[in-house]
Length: 147
Image (cartoon, rainbow, N blue to C red; front, side):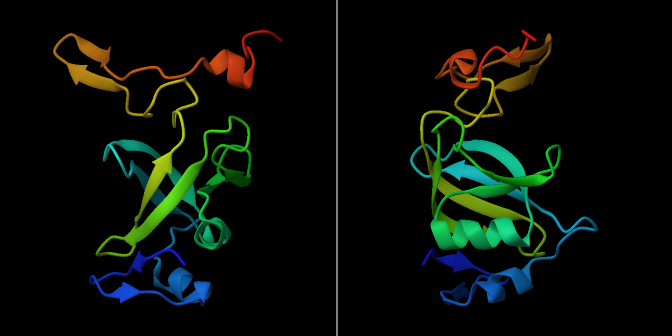
């Protein structure tokens, strides 16, 4: 079982996944933001949304699973690309309205080919690309400009 921390900092290691779900303050759409951090580098690699089912699956399988708001379906990170996120820990913030997943990120997290979805930084001249590209997104996902 994945170690989980609940609001208030108490450790929680129950096989009853529903108890984890009960702590979360879901938004009006039944979603909670999930911040994803790489275990090794400590980089924040992405933010996505989870619903109760995706959180349960994440805890049970140790593979990060999210809710795709655009496709209206569950989404296992890496199912298409092979760039899975092996979940090492799940935490919840003090208000219960945000999840932190610490993962072992395979290759890169961003569909643009970057290691992190946070590859642009605001500078005086505007948004500047500062993150590294680690894979060719067209080779992985196909050329979406054709079509």
